[in-house]
Length: 74
Image (tube, rainbow, N blue to C red; front, top):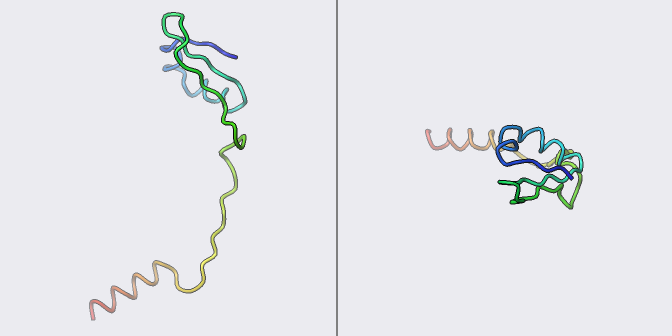
């Protein structure tokens, strides 16, 4: 578990969040007293998961919009 002052955390937030992403817990203090804990999420370990692929049959949305505009302008 890491501990840091609020001002130091604010200055180096990205560095501390990288450590949290790798499983560390960070305690933020103000005047030596703990005010917050940043812990890794309880769910999946990484937000970098492959995206779902959506399959849609029929016209694309863009094509359908263009056709509708053409019909309205005619």
